[in-house]
Image (cartoon, rainbow over the protein chains, first blue to last red):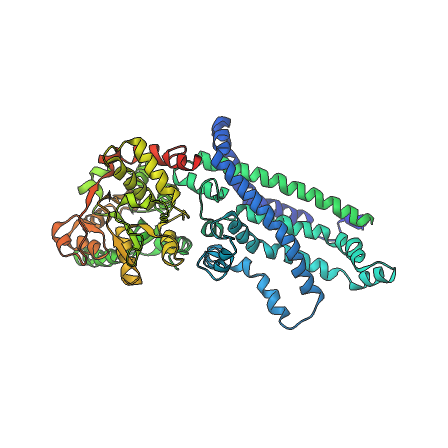
Length: 278
Length: 334
């Protein structure tokens, strides 16, 4: 395999496509991000530090990162279950369920936010029974989590599905015939094989949640210090024509996300290596 | 519903316009406005275009764009080619002037501080007013739930915040300290801070949250008319703030496009008897006494104070109350 890749003359057009890819990435991703960083750099450290360490901003970071992580973890578990069911079993209506998974991709986030708020507000179908149990969802951090779970689900399911499909059930049967219990087969055979894709899906869901604005502002209630997400703080800064403050918070968010995604990538590489060794 | 998704549609429409505008020979101007004026300017545009056609023989197309006032001002600053702006606060027009697109002293170029119509902030309550809310003081009572958008992101919310503050200052023994305490108690009664006025209306009307909505007077009239007087009623406090939404020609844009004459005439039309009658029809308070008398609703009489009288202008009010670390932030810092 390695030998084949090194020669890479078998596939033509390497120079052209690489050049185009770099150009395209610069145009679409790097230039806007560089402009952001440049803008932030022009304000000086003092202003940057003041803008990013105000208690209200710190509270919004805590909520954004906390709720995003919680939502990603929920999706890690239930997304895996959904993907597993969709790949491994044949049942009536499977195609419909499969299509449903994509809905959060397609639905405008504001629509999702309004729908979820109607549902989970204390007057809503789900909010009312939950409120009698003493659980308030809309206009609390839990509501933020609910919206983020909704928009993050397809990322986990759609990255896991092809890997699960490629995983031959015969491998599990072989494990069983070699005396592994069902739990052992899952733990020793299935999980290592899907771990890299699983992590990717969770990382994607997490990253998507960090930047989510449209759906969350409707369900969160936007109370300062309590349910205000970082992207909303950026919007409020812009509303005061405080471009410096907005940029500073945005860059901090970006750097933190970048570091976290980097860490997840490392973890993924490590688990892929471990999977390969076993 | 379409109002909520509108900023995107507006943008898409504008992008299309940019292409269409280049080739069409007919005259075209763009009015960049804030959220609740959509219906008002639809009527104004039709009436003015007809008048302009009769006077000059030219076909005039007037495009309109709506969104949060601050967002709209930023779009103009960032290059949206608005011939005129009709925004919620002088502060936002000032921001455009500071960016060099509008000449300083713009507010003296048209009568009445460049505000052809006014509005105010009133209370919308549920039918029968079950909590018996009559004036600002009642809103801070324990157990009352108040719905208002976030003053950080909404022009309407800034007006109502300042109205509450000014009311408290004018109470017997009122001072900055008592005003601060009062507004703090009032905002402790606010369970949700939506980002815009329309979002708050949804929270109050559709989700049934809250006992009272702090609303633009014209929006309150509209809600009662559209949703039924059997569900909501308007409570007029003893005192409120005179909201003056200003209009201005964007000098840089009209000079470049050569549309100054028509843009100027468009804004002056707002002051004409016909323009004033249209404003009254949409529940904005016309400046013109005759139009006021013929208005479809009786605008309640209450003591109204302007922002210049009460706070020494928007720049001051913004700095003291809504900038980072201002009185609004302090409510939540405690």
